[in-house]
Image (cartoon, rainbow, N blue to C red; front, top):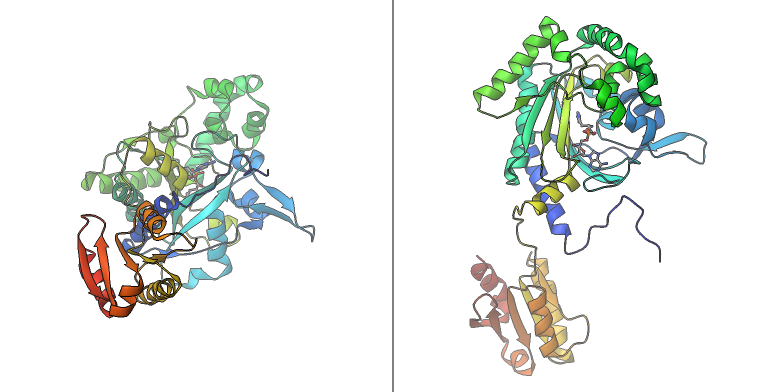
Length: 419
Ligand code: HAM
């Protein structure tokens, strides 16, 4: 037997309603906040992620699904959504649209990681990206959009942590301080971090190796190196969150695992799903568009992991809406009645009512048992006498009550009764 690849998951027919619920909730939040959907390809030129996400990140260094296509071009399955949307923005000239440009996406993403609870090789993200505004209001709005998504799903106990990692100017000073701090410890660090020490010392703070974590424990904090503009920006964001009473803590250890970030970064973290507790992460990336060859425009966004949210909801008993079921099951006793049941179901479906009939040549008894199993809300049986009279006996499954309904009035009866 051929199995599903390690780190990937099937979504089964009796589970997909949970996914649909999350996706519909995401779309509703996007609608309320006026974010428009964008879709980018599953794979991009490898260079996009190397330049965008950053060569010293774990994502690019260790986790990308990269392959040569038949034309010898290096392609990579997207490990995240932001770089692709930034490319879309630049390539399609969206810089000439009225600003800000507010986008969202629901996408699979691929990272060659060691699978564990909440960490997969193929996972899905609901993300938003806003281009063109540098104002703290936009940071706050993006954070509120994420928070409102989690609230709509009735998720509890998720903590918001925010930080500012400064701009190019303050980062320069900070990198110098980090280099001074790490210099005596280079020998103690992993190979990757030795390279990071030369190229991008900030990334050492993000390393998952124990020995590097130990060394990084007392490293200087970026918050002590912010320039005046970055400080002011961060205060602006915080006062907007404070004004609405949104709870958060400032965690100066959040540096995020991707290189494009600047200024505000944030994560929504849960303690209920094990080591992979970050259900949503995001931040500003004011330099990314320019770095990818576009106009110098500020941007900010987040992405929430759908599988992690599902895991959290399941682990903490957050209710999902009921699985969808057909409104009516129409059983047929003999060949002629089955044909009528088939036709009536088609008519109802044509009018927007979900209807089901037998596909298995079952007896009426077995058909009714099946109708019960699939949760049909109403059941009707057509036999010789119903064909003759044109009147059906319709049973409401929730209370067992029955009603005589003319075939031509079945649709309006169901509409009236289905409340
Ligand atoms: P990220 O923190 O790498 O950020 O991923 C965002 C979310 O995707 C995580 O918080 C987590 O819920 C989920 N996630 C990441 N990796 C995995 C995995 N291996 N298995 C399951 N879930 C995972 C980004 O991807 C940025 N593009 C977010 C962003 C958008 N920043 C600005 N705009």
